[in-house]
Length: 171
Image (cartoon, rainbow, N blue to C red; front, side):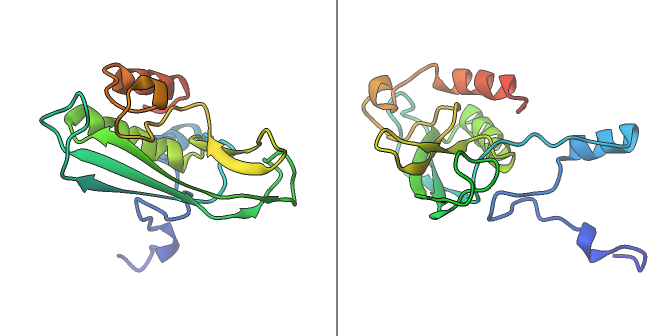
């Protein structure tokens, strides 16, 4: 690092709280246009991690499983949530993808969606409690049981979630 560079301009490519720097495309557009706009949703602060499980998912007998862990602690709502200043209940959720080329591609897209705060939101549930829940991007939160229980096998899931993410500007 040269003496003219500030350490504040160095970025890690993953932030634990889900807030990261603009993407390289956004930074490049800023250089061209002098300004950039970061896509942003209403997701509260949280954490996304993943691990490889050495077992297959139904429909993907030759691939291991990617288990994605999402953790949102209880918190206080901000202006982008339904009831600013009020508490909300956090969430712990596991989602699953096949550890294949397409599964890894979807993992990268989900990571991007997470970092732009599009995967989760705070909503009021049917008993009046404000909680963190998934937004409009579907996640497979059970490894088995089929489509009816948000599980596998679901041969169209990877294609469908890529299309939904693309519609939200995540490519």
